[in-house]
Image 1: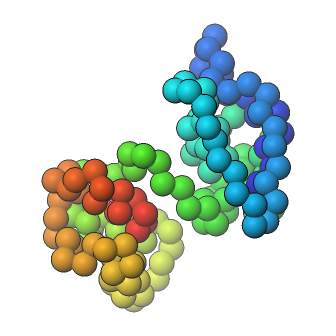
Image 2 (image 1 turned 120 degrees about the vertical axis):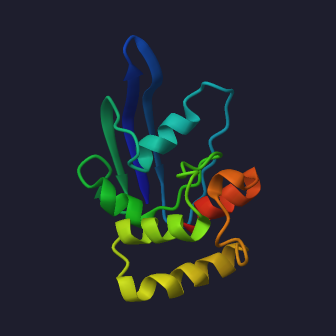
Length: 145
């Protein structure tokens, strides 16, 4: 379940998102449609705990996005169009870094990285530098994390 209540995001005098409210129940699907600059990405970044709102309240899976953003991030998969990656790392090193940040036990990391690489079609790309990958393969890495 996702609840947004009067979300607002301002950057100085510019208001990117103003007074957005909605509820998405379990099993429901919501899509954001609108012109460039309408605040779709900003709203998603707020709801996923990557950006604080100026005003309002957001709850995802029962957790307040602003009070417990790490719990929200543990439960939500969010893939922006251009995933934020460390472009100088290899695919395997980056996924290992992310696994460590997420608290995956050291003894389980290689197996879990291998499993997720298999699932998203990255087998054979382990030693490639992220910055050398096509946009599509960088998105696969973003999905794998």
